[in-house]
Every structure is written in structure tokens, then in C-alpha cells.
Length: 422
Image 1 (cartoon, one colour):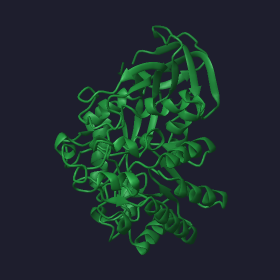
Image 2: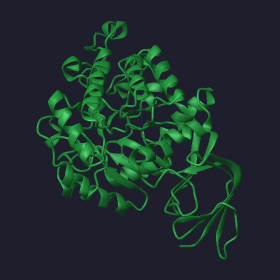
Image 3: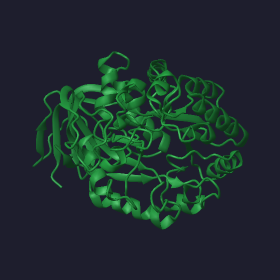
């Protein structure tokens, strides 16, 4: 592999606190130097002052493979991920079949490696078939490469099952990721319960369903000593509980996704199914609470929450349409909107997309340092681009940000020193 020298870049590495204009040398798929020392025969790229950061680490994404390849394949997800600067992707296990078998976990990892542009770290199914009843074989799944355990977009409902999951996961040094929505309260709801849902005639999900699930599972984490991680947290009440649990020293972490700090429930006006998500979009005060939690460190990571849907899933009456939004290509751009708005400093935002999720997973990714893998993202923080249905990379086009102009354009992505986008 030809050495690569990237010059005139704003090198940003939140893991080490590095934020300086300089050069970076890549040799044999790893970062060789941050001094800009020339290498014989190296290819040189002038970054023109653009930001060079670690490749993004996405904690939570759905891919259609196996079982729903018509919505998304691992190859098409890799294409979308590269366009968004993502080089490490944690995929959910509620596929068809579910990732409750070590052979399936190994299959997904191999398929990710075959793309040459993406490391896939699968979550193992916490329960068999993600049905919330009988626990999967945690030890075998962990040995096969599962980074932790979850039932994906379904909450682990029975308290006893969640207690056992936390206890067993602790024995294998892993976390349990919970979809924080009390199932019996959520029911078949389609939007956050309140004035807007009533006016639109939509069945509502009380926002309290999130806080109730979070409160229960914090108590179970305290009981077991296990590590519970709450995905796509979207309400101020739940974040208050998580903040208090962290202050008490409990093993409680969380992430959120761009729709919950960028959009509120008014985005579903006109029965816009692209904005039907799970959990549903919330009131403006909850969106502001998520922004505050990003800034004060309560939220540990920002995940894409990528959920591919095809046209038939969304071209239905709102209550019947499938929830979910494409998020790989827009993850960085929507996050940077909070930087442009003055809510986050750029290093804080990039940390939530790189070093902090990597630290949660205990992996080598998410940093720029000599000897580290050359997984890199080069982006222009103010260059605008348009989110357009039918024009996003990959198969999934169901973006809740469709029609939006985003400031923050990826201009190059490298995986182990090989350019995979731009």
C-alpha cells in the first residue's frame, strides 16, 4: 500500500485533546506520524484546511441482512456509512433470523470485512429470536464477536428477564442495551401522546413510557451490578434519571440520535411518515433537554439509529406506516448543526461520534495516534449539501431530514489507510 501524507488539515482527536493544523502520515494501514515527516514515494493530499478526525463509530444501526435485503444489505449500508465518515458500525440483532446464534454473528462480521470499508461489530440478541422470553447463549455469542446484548428495537419487557440479562452480561464483561419504552404503555401508539397526536387522530404513546422503563432498569442495574445502556433517549424525564444514576456511580450509560436533538413532534405534521420514528419525536422541551444532556455529558454517544425502510413501508396511513429513518449519511451533518447553533464545541461533537462510543465498547477505534489504525474522516464543517430522497448513498432513502440542507460535508473517508469515499 502506497504511503499517504495528508497535509494542511485541522487534525482533531478528542481522545488526546489534539486540535491543531498539521500533517498526518499513513503507512501500511496505520498512522505512522503526526509530524508530517515525508515518506519516500508517498501520495500527498492537501486537505485545504478541512477537519481530519477519526472515522466515526456508530453504536446503533439496523441493516436488512440477513432477511430483509430488499431494504438494505451490508454492502449498501457500507456505501452509506463511508459517505458519512463512519468506519465502525454496531448492528442490531433483530434481523430475520435474529443474531442469537454464534454462526450468524460471525457471518455478519465477515460480511462487514468483505466490504473493505467498514468494521461491523454486531450486538448479540439478548433473548432468543429477540422475543423477550428465554435468554440467548451470552458466552458463545460473546466469543463469536458480539460486543454486547440487546433485543434491538424491542424492549426487554419482563423484569426478571432483564435482571438475568444484566447479571449474565456482567460475567462476560458486556453491557445490555435497552430500548427504553415500557411495552404495555407504548402499545400500538404512533406518536407522542398529547395535543398534536389528538388533533391528528393518532394513537398516542405517553412520554412517561420512556422514563418508567429507565427507572426500572436503573434499579435492576443497581441490584445486579450490571451495565445497562439506554439507546436513543428522547425525553428530559429519562435523562434526569440517568443523570442521577451516574452521580450515584451506577453502571448506567446512554446514547441519543440526531432526530431527538434536531427535530420535534411538529415534523410529523401533514402525516409525514418519514418522520415516524421509534421512539416517536417529542415536544420541544424534550428536544432542548436532549441538547442540554449532550452538553453536560449525560449522553455518552450519538448514534445514527439507522433504520432502513422501503417505499411500501412508508407509503401507508401514518398509524400503519413502519417507524424508522435512514441515518448513516446524515449522522455527521445533523450533529454539526448543534455546533453551528452554538450548543456544542466542535471537539465535543466529534467526541460523541468517535472516542466516547469507542471507549464504551472498549475498542481501538476512535482515535488518531501513531500506531492506531488509519480509520479517518475528512470533512468540511460548513460546506452545505442537500438531503434528497432517491439521492442518498445506499438503498435506504427514508430520511426524516429529507429536503434539508446540512452544513458539514464529508470529502474523504479512509479505512485502514485505503480511501473508501471521496
